[in-house]
Image (cartoon, rainbow, N blue to C red; front, side, top):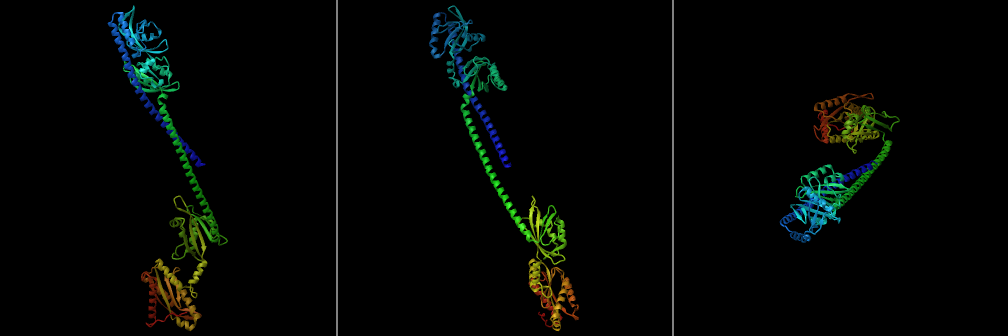
Length: 628
């Protein structure tokens, strides 16, 4: 469930990122499209402005020339000739008609029409209002839109009793559009000539986009379009300063580019309004296709990423499931082994080193020899009180090897274990303990161990029987060689005493073998009193003995021990009513002081013993030991 939530969260995040990236890209591309289209439109309407300027100047120049010619003629026939010249130029100029007119809007055309007409009145009156050359438009009686260029005459001209004060030339709207560059953007545009205050001097194609009869561009933009106020202010300021620029507005649900360029005549500007769909259709299509491709790519990336994550998650879940199964199998196997082990071991305990607790299980006796649970330190105190180690560390209590500090220093991995043999301090009880690590904390410190105890008394008894002299109870000659080899292998220092009894053979011959055996037992008992419990006493054979002292004794101590042995064995023996006296010849050698090889130490001690025996016999040949 948690993994599913994570995937959903990731999918939402990726989808959000894709949406944000798509929107950001769309906005960026839209800005680029706007800038590129606006630049293109400005360039287009810049050319239109130049063309219009030239066209207006040409018409005003022609009208100025006509004014000059009128002022130079005096007869009507000359006027008729001039009219005829204008008629002949009509096709080449493509104008609609040529006028002379006055303030009462009476007019006379080159084609011979005269009179007044309301349709053209506004065009004539505009010139008188401005008192300067002007351009205007009107709708003729034929419903055709006309563009009129007019200038006042320098001097009034009277013809047929009518005084005229202005001349003008008119064009069909379509002709002007064609002369200015054909139909801009296939008629999907409006073109206006405006003054700095936004008033419209001339409009081309007003029927296609913006409202017909519009006189104030700024008022129309504010009242009829959706356009940010800052953009409106910027457009007004630019046109007032005859600067070029562009903006975007919305009219009747459609977007329009609004571009403006100064015309170069007075303070006029040409303003173009073009539907964005006409300008941007190609780029919008590219944008939509690009965004669609990006969305598809991002979606594929999203699906691929989620698929990879799902596969990875499933693989990880499979690995975790397999790992859990392995742990469960291992745990089950461990429990089976543990249950089997608990049936065959004598006793075991699980110690929690971090919590100072233990659990104890007894399988050998009817009742536990320790409380079944308690402080781990109390368990160590009990072990220390009752047991000591066997081998070369017999003076070390077993509990010292079970302290948390020592266990953590030697048990660092699952493969590590510890084994030692120990015995009871007072009773003839021998055991072996295996310590196995069980748990570690997050820092890798050992926290829990299992201690398994097994009785080895029977094995010790058999080993003791095999290594013990049957008569005296001392270690025998076979074990003597084993102990020497072990000492040399472990490089432990020792002193070896070789002993041979003096005058034993006469006693054995006089009193019999039974008395001799009893004497040998007493000698063995006295030798045991001369050494420590961790030292060794051997009967090599007959009346020959050896003592192995596990210590690095100097010469003075060696001589003291030799004198003690001689004194102990020189005391009389009281056996079956008889007082028996024997002596002893003793030689010793120290390892590694006298030699670094145990065999050479043995030979040297033996040689010194026989040297002393010769002294005891007055320098004569020494008799060999009595053989049993």
